[in-house]
Image (cartoon, rainbow, N blue to C red):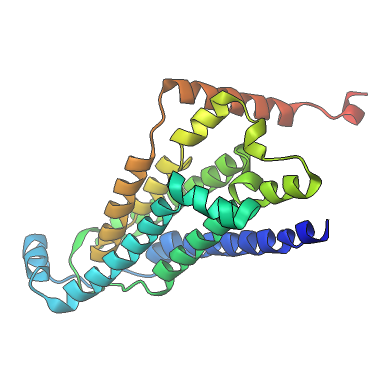
Length: 262
């Protein structure tokens, strides 16, 4: 039992790292663009700005750096999700395979956020400068971001959050209950194989709904949108199963407790 219990701190450390990274990503994706001010545009003419940017090394260099950071994150996230890599990590890390994946994803995302190069002098695709748009557009974006993050947290609660973070696998292993996925129905396994990102629409809202869409933010939104689109493969059967599970959990939450029923 002692060696098995040693797995618990590793899983908890991975969970804490992932949780802290998630909080930091909220700041990076929402608070920073909404409260960080409007970046300086290259010029009033958007076409001249974008053409000038293609010849300006002071813009192309940080743009290439940001692209490299995003490709590092996408590569890690995709490579470690491949079946062959999962089989290899499961062979050497056992029940900590999911925790390792979560920790590596959190570290890759930390690299993106900490070393991201803003491009304040780059061209912008749109910006809200004139009144009343300069007041109302940021406010509307803020409201939509709050709603999106609340939906993201709610959806993660509907799913098996402990299993997504790798905690449940270690818990089951310590108690000798086997692999959690082995206890799931074929419909659930089918859904999980198609759905790697259960919060696709909400994340897209956070990425695109900003008062000012500058060069670096456009790169972030475009690449992650492409990645989310390729990883999101639900069909009607998956949606019916997901709807049924949501209704079941809502029914359990709304059911009165035994003390209240009496």
